[in-house]
Length: 220
Image (tube, rainbow, N blue to C red; front, side, top):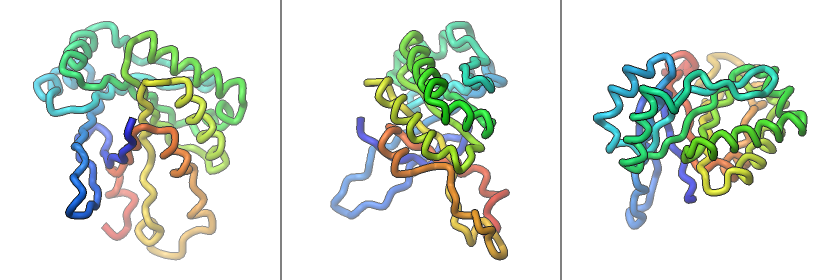
């Protein structure tokens, strides 16, 4: 699978932004859209007429417990999801549900332990393959800086297990320091939780969350 970085806003459809020489053809436009479980009925109904414009649909329906177990919020084999996802497959739109996890302490506890980390890799892979999905989208937010190497190891293990299935990674933007702080940045301002080099190796698509700009960019 060819890797391409996509700039996205959660629940909003946007396009990739790249700089290319005049002789280099532009990449094929890819558009992803998220449908949250708390808007399943209206979200699927609103998206259905526009499926042909999408590359990927992300049912935003899976969380993770503090013990590292997947916790689906919706059964995607039931309506309104079943007929919607069947139509997506008919139109060759990728069906890639999102796993959202924002408990930094739990993420570190599970991913820093080899047994629980591998168990989560196996559980995600099994869920994708049993349900016939095209892949999985990982939205692990609020990670600690010390979790960085373990998150990278987790991605590597999951990528190897997933085979031909897609691994999408939805991650926080890395705003320049002079845009994040109006004064002197704190000493740990450049201590990050995401290793972009490793993410590039093990994520078929990288989707960057930029929709919080109004709250985190002091310049804009």
